[in-house]
Image (cartoon, rainbow, N blue to C red; front, top):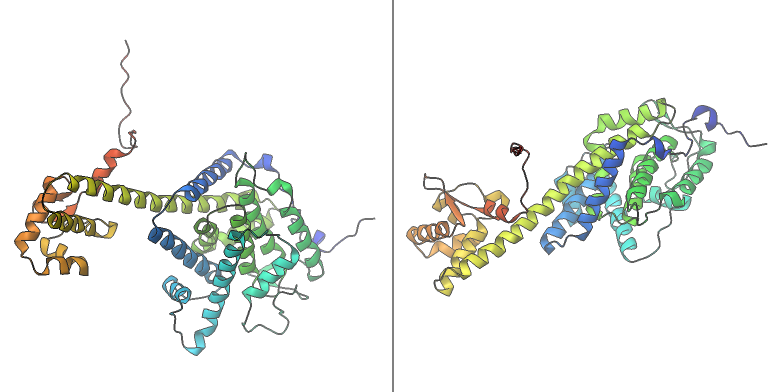
Length: 405
């Protein structure tokens, strides 16, 4: 006779099943968009500075989200300082830095391991190792053993984890399920199946709650591991954690509803996917802005190369318009304000008169690289580059009238 376990009565929603036919079209559309945008992100060459920025920014966001949702109060700037090794906290707050450092090392270690080509296997032992890493050098209660499955009952916000005696069995069932070929990436579906596996791993680890502490952080490490192993770009692999943290009350509501519904995972998948796709759209916009900036700089070089003038004059005007071009410097400014945009510009015009600067700005205006607003202020005309984008009807434009013959 089959063995009857306590969780079958106390947690009947732990079925380890996903009926793909019940996933609504709207969620499949989100999954398809996620696959497309992940492939786009993975295939777009970035400037080294932009690539580093993207990785560092979203590493900081992912680390902060992973720890903040469980009570860590460090800001994103403080997390970035910890990544850079420059964070200084008083002794009473050192544990916050240790929590963050544990996650930084876990994320970076995982990514290095996967980039090196080492095969990654999701096993019970690996999940336990993640938990040990999460709790490393942190004070815990006596019954909590980092990396060891709990032997006592636990709960969070009114939810009780699965019976302790079933945790080993449930964790083994979970990794067996997630390692099933039905969740592996393939040529037809790309990363769609692993994305589903990542979301389900998080949900089920939250339900089982197999450890005495650090369950949420462990779940987010497993989720991250599944995503990057499947080929999701590292910045994008942090987006689910960001979403859960930024919509924390809805996150807990969705977790609660998923168990109260008897294990209907579809609403949680829909909630997670909408946040994931929203985050991917933002990242694609960042990449698009960088590509437009590169195209704009190339355009600047071409325009000035054919404009004539001495080498020194052309170089000075080129440096002037490039310093005016970053997104945070595109508002209309007076010549005096423009000369102080950066130490480089200040030095460039320090030994020249304001007349030289105005002459340079007017020449750039004649070339279509700068626009004046009529009040003596100038800004870079970066929107010129939009003329080279493929033609399309914008949402604001009325639909064309079709004349009947």
